[in-house]
Length: 425
Image 1 (cartoon, rainbow, N blue to C red):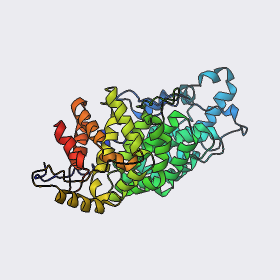
Image 2: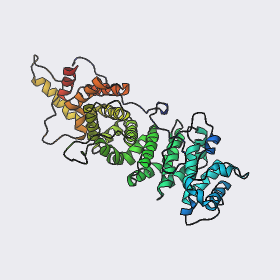
Image 3: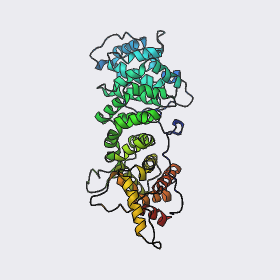
Image 4: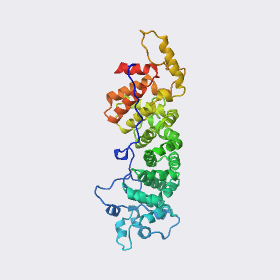
């Protein structure tokens, strides 16, 4: 082993949208409280709008009155106030479209409705934008050019859940895809801090899925990765990674280790951190030093191996993050230079017939190991080897092998790391 050159596994780059590493959101169905669902395949935009049911309930607003911006909302107000017996079933657009005055609002008009004083108008306008820009790069570009993105970002701080949820859904669709100008426009509108503020204050599962999905999309653009780290690394770790990893234990029995929750929020967040962990030495060091992050990722993986639940996307993301963080760990850990010296002295003290470890044993600690130190312990080597034996996910296999390659690279290493790899191969 010591006579062979070791080549590190380079941190993986950003994951391309067509491989589902950033997430689109389906066209919104305008159904209050329901999850967004895709339209039937082949349905065009106009027929899809024709079958949607609006969710405006203007009776709940204290500023009732005619809406000046568009005949669509005027007719919707009329149908909901003059036909109260149908209000509970949400009057269909079919009723309105019989009126010859009805027409689809154009994009400029919809964006202007985002600033309307009535909250139901804001939320429906945002939902309509979310629908229009689903897999439509031209509409996304038009929204950006019409300055719709700053208005949507502003709505993320709106106190009404329906408004900030729909605005976040629109931003998630707008941020998906290869057009990085939309991601930059969200950043230039202070969208990253606004998304994180919303994540901290909202316990709504759908809102958290939308926020983390938008951040995952944004993190795929190289120049924005450190910005995501600077604004959101600790928040994402504290709000999502640690709680959903099971690191804090079983809520019903604190003495028992907790099980990870492989939900959409954890998948989105781990995907975001997977992207930013490939941004170079500074990014790697920031993630290594993030309080609780490495501990939580490893706990989740140990639990996954124990339960043989290792073929999901979240496990893949966790292994890829750890592979990236183990890259150049022998050079980038604080005070690594002194271990080079200790390793050389350790080799000189041993006779020619003795086994040379090529490193120094750093495992003796008076305090429990955590964080960065966990990246190069024998337990993590065995974890990667277990993943190689059990996983059927090719990306997980590649990442586990890359992590082992990284731990075996360089002239400095914990003495038992290479030995552990050798003993199990």
